[in-house]
Image 1: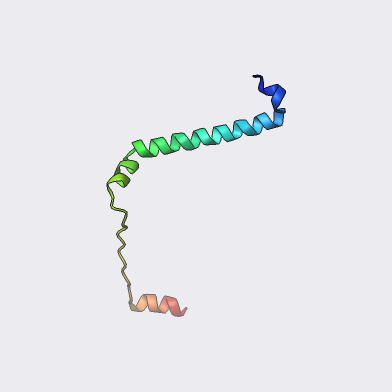
Image 2: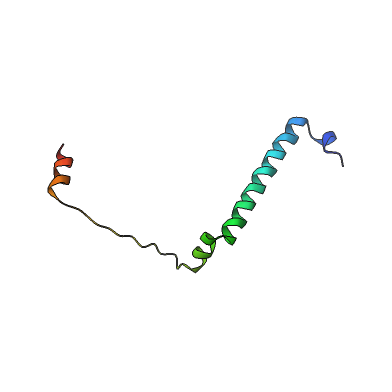
Amino acid sequence: MDLSTVFSDNQIAVIGCFVALATCALVAAVSFQLGPAGKASAHSNGSLKMNVARKDDAESQQKKAA
């Protein structure tokens, strides 16, 4: 089947762009899964560790007032 008889040149270009975007997304997903970030996320339990620290000193109080 010849695509030029079914689609116009502009439509073929748009389809080509969507195919290129899908290919890039697939390559990014595969490289993430195979890379160190994907391996680290597979072993995590889903919780995030957050360090919450509040620094109340005279200098920060002066900055808030200014």
